[in-house]
Amino acid sequence: MEALNLPKTDLKLQRKGNRVTVFDILRKKHVILTPEEWVRQHFIHFLINQKGYNASCIANEVALNLNNTQKRCDSVVYDAQARPIMIVEYKAPHISISQNVFNQISRYNIKMQVRWLVVSNGMQHYCCKINYENGTYEFLPDIPTWDELSR
Image 1 (cartoon, rainbow, N blue to C red):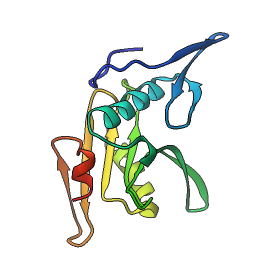
Image 2 (tube, rainbow, N blue to C red):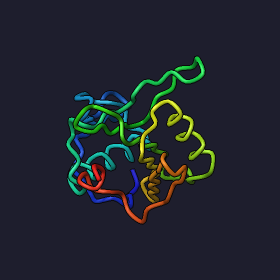
Image 3 (tube, rainbow, N blue to C red):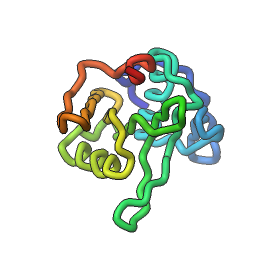
């Protein structure tokens, strides 16, 4: 797998036949290592180790019913009261971050109503903060720390 624009982290890789798996510290199991999963695992470790997020407040592959279809948010961050506050959408490094990706995460947010939307392909990372009171949003220069989420 290619180097990402994220801090290097030691992932637990394992070969199963002709497939490689990676240990997901949130789901507590090995999952097939795809380019998107490579990004997810690095980003989760980044949130926990560099941004101070509590691993117990993050979930991967969160099911969501949207217009009578089952969708899955790549990762959801919850506050201390178990309310969703951030959705994170991952793409493989070779997938460019386009308007379609933002449309996808925005559709998920119709149900979730979080204040923070994050999109990453491991090379580029975008964070959007939503102000529901004013009906506005702003793109931030960096991913917020855990402490900044509660402000």
